[in-house]
Length: 264
Ligand SMILES: [Zn+2]
Ligand SMILES: [Zn+2]
Ligand SMILES: [Zn+2]
Ligand SMILES: [Zn+2]
Image 1 (tube, rainbow, N blue to C red):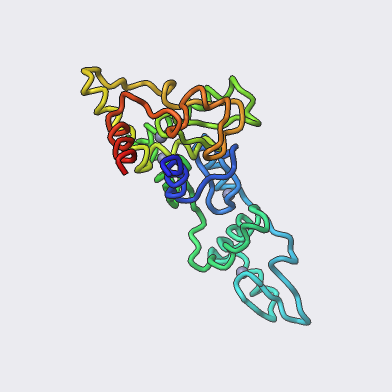
Image 2 (spheres, rainbow, N blue to C red):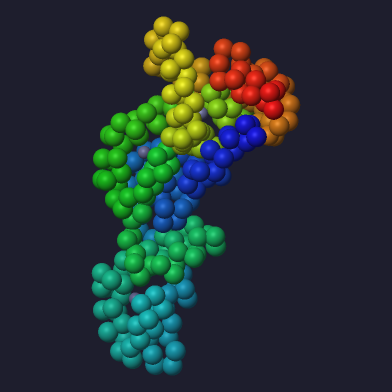
């Protein structure tokens, strides 16, 4: 059972990032655009968008109709005025923006009444906000900075391997993922925090100072597919042998557990 913990710890993270190419910041309106740059994100958010006419307006007989606002009038002048109102223009931009995300994103059209036109996400922290300024403020917090340090470390490592087939690996937890942002989020998980706490305690007991910048030892980018749970794989076998084959002798809790099992 022990080996399955790495799977559970991934499951407890809110939305699992399936796109290996996802960047740090994401636009949560189209859910498509991602970037490591707040400036690029800001440009994306403020882009003027347009919709094909048939998707938002119609003329039926002598009635002019705005499908976005459910507005009808017989007077062309009134219709033109309607199209210049803030309410209409905001809705128009929002609908066009949502549609940029493709069919899979169209369910969002149902919630545009609540509609804040800006919805952004920090993929490293799973943090949502409604303005670029608030996101910028978020990037100055300590936890975000720690996450970005790991993100950049992985980016640097991945340039040395084939990015098509590489995966990201936490040596402490035997956790691996195809998308590096999942590993960045993994360091917040209960499982990882516990393992890391235990390790610090061990180092302390051995009279060793906890190393601060040991990202290269803890987190690896490997150039071959991760092993299936319970399956022997030459790539990872060399790093951390599966626990049930060789329990690490330096960890007393393993021995106790083993003895308990044998006694039963
Ligand atoms: Zn967008
Ligand atoms: Zn309208
Ligand atoms: Zn963040
Ligand atoms: Zn871990």
